[in-house]
Every structure is written in C-alpha cells, then in structure tokens.
Length: 334
Image 1 (cartoon, one colour):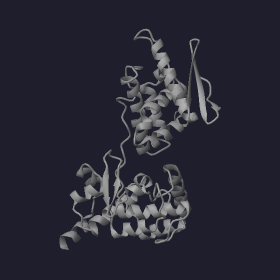
Image 2 (cartoon, rainbow, N blue to C red):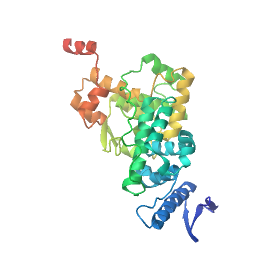
Image 3 (cartoon, rainbow, N blue to C red):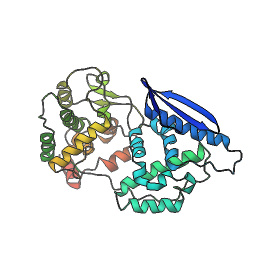
C-alpha cells in the first residue's frame, strides 16, 4: 500500500494485490488510509480459499479497520481516535504483529505492565475497547475464532468520585483562565471558564456543552439532540444559567468556539498552572451542580434524573446523589 498522494484539493491512494491495482480518491489523507486498510483486508479475505487458512493482518491494521467501520460512528469516537493515534506507544512492536500472535498470555502481560504506568480505571477502559476490536474481528470479519481478551480479568474500576469543588478552587480556576464572572468571553480561555460555570448551573457534561448550537437554546431549556446515553435530553435553565447565556456573543453555530481537544488542552494547562492538576476535574462540576439541585433547589431524585439524563435512578444515587449523614440530618430537621 503506497502513501496517499495529494492531487489538487483531494488525495489519491493505490492498493496493489496479486498484480491488480485498486485506487480511490477522498477529500482527506486520513480517509484514504482508512479505505486502503479496509480494502487490503477485504482482498485478503477474498483470497482465503478455506476456512482453516489464516488471514494475517496486523493488530494496528485491524484497529484501523475497526475505527473506519465502527469506531468513527460511535458517540465516543474521539476516545477511539485518540487510542488509535497512540496505539504503537501503548503496544510497542506488538502493534505490528499479526492478530493471531495476540494471545491471552500476551494480553495478561500487557495488562500487568500497563498497570505500572497508569491508573486501573485507564487500563479497564482500554481493555474494553481492545476487546471490542477483537470481537469485531471474530463476529463480523471471521478472522479469528477466539477473542484473546475474553476471560482476562479487567482491573477493578475505581469508586465514583464524590468530590465537590470549593469556592476557593473555583476562583483560582477562573483567575488562571483570566475570566471574571459576568464578562463577555473574548479569548479561548474565557470560553473554557464560562463553560465551567455553566456546567455547575446545569449539570451538563463537558462534551455536551461543547456541542451546543444556538438553535438548541430555547427560552427555558436547552435541547441536547445527542447525549452520552444515546437519548436526547432537555436541560432546564435556572436564572443563573440564563444570565450566563446572556453574556455570550450571539452568533450562528456553536455557543463556544472549541472542539474536544482544544478545550481539554486549555483546561489541563490551567490546572497545572494554578496547582490543581490531579485535584480538580471538569466532571466534578456535574457533581457540584447535582448537589446544589438537591440542597438549594430541593429537587426530588426522580426529577433530578430527568435533568441529568440518567436512565436508571440507581446510577444517579450511587454516583452523584450521595448526601452525607450530616446533610440528611439537616434535611430531616428542616
């Protein structure tokens, strides 16, 4: 497979197989590579004359085909894309080994080595993705008979965070991003600060805020056509949330001029700058918002689930709605 060649405003790539040439043209270099990877696997599958004959493609080629056919269409595609971009860093030489060389023994060794580098929750999530890739190879491509990740225990997921953000930490974050409440955001860092404040008023996730368009904003609520759990959701707006919306510059398209990566970089750099790296996470704003809804707005849990988008109340209770014994005593005596 040759590298894509730029032709005017598009890219062209050629795949050669048993004396034949197959070409395709796409708007981007990445789309060319995805097509070529899928085409190569398709040709090798067609050349397999018996069920016992193994089709050898590399682990990375399988991942590339999975991303092109499945991963790029998922709501969490950005995570899959990030994992693909760092795949050789995580797997080393094994990334370019045949998929048939990836055995349960190798997976176990990789898991144990990875646990020395990153948190168990990271390894748990990565193993879930890689297992999905091999399940795709087994059930959709018929390249393997067994998924080497099946039966290998994942690290235990960490307990859900229950940390709230203090007023001092909020002010420190805003100061680091050079933003003052009530001001119109004008710099990229200002929009990150604004989003943090907006998240604490609405319990919206970072990705949900990044994707809001002005056409989704109504008088008393914001309509989210796509959310993490796959369902649309209407998020009611408090007076404070409306005040925050009123300071944004009105324009067509999105509320804030960021994608996932640009937002993440500014947020993480600021945490390091103000000494809160590893202490505060953006998602803590969701826990903060839910706690405020309970303590200040007195929302019952069944209504709260409508606001936050939780399909099962158990998840909401076990992860976010967890008042302390002191909080419950205050409620009983109110």
